[in-house]
Length: 330
Ligand code: PBG
Image 1: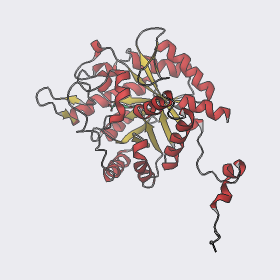
Image 2: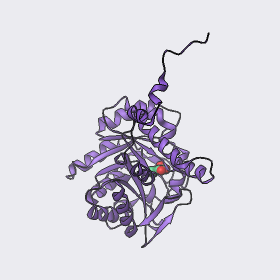
Image 3: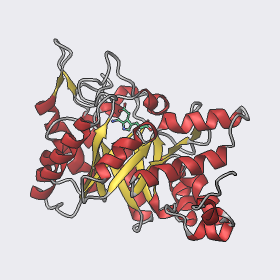
Image 4: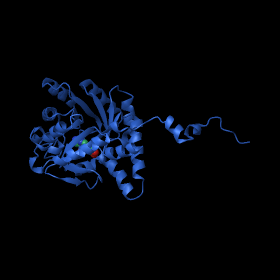
């Protein structure tokens, strides 16, 4: 006689209403932070080849784009600049130029949309002639940690002056959260938040982003500051330091290959946890969908839900607009 099951988990899956009733994780448009690429010029909207559906916008066009997003319920943005090659130098001086593309656009967005939250990026790479997040020693090629802090602090201060709500240090230099906190506080910006890129891995998934900004390192790689993808405990060490140094929120990046790290960090902090669903993760789904090999929309929603299930409170994602459209349709 076959044994009749006494426990039947399938009962909780028997209809859409019941499935909805017992659903544990819910995505909402307010979970999303939308990264947005800004470029020089006027009336520019250039699609990034390796990121179908994602564009670089000139300052005038980015305002329209943000308007469309706000309409959809997206209220948080992470702008990144594509800087003209001629403006780059060893010390990333352009990064603190209040009249430069980035800071002027940030100020303009805040003027037009005071209610949106802008998280600005602190790292030298878009402005560095070396394409690194810190200063490169001309002789040894080493990344100079403490000298870089000076530049990063000035960059963060300029961003706060431009109206940034949240400073997002993505550079992975040691001690930068404490340094930036001190610079902000001593200049009257104690209300500006820091979302630290706490565990940022030296990942191959950043390729399309570097295409978008022309920001790839000219020499070498980022392994002396970004983390080894093989390491989990090290993320907890970075977490402890960021908490001690005064981070308001912490981030794991990338997201999809690091769901275990998201969970680990979630279980070890009371701070909000965010995850960056990076360019390469977006490109993979888009490429497969274009080939007809995956259902792009379903895959997108599954990816985003899994990041949230792993423990992320908010997600930086290039899918923000598309996912917001799906959520609006219901
Ligand atoms: C640079 C920075 C990178 C990303 C965000 N900030 C690239 C890098 O570290 O080389 C990647 C984001 C993405 O791939 O979507 N500090």
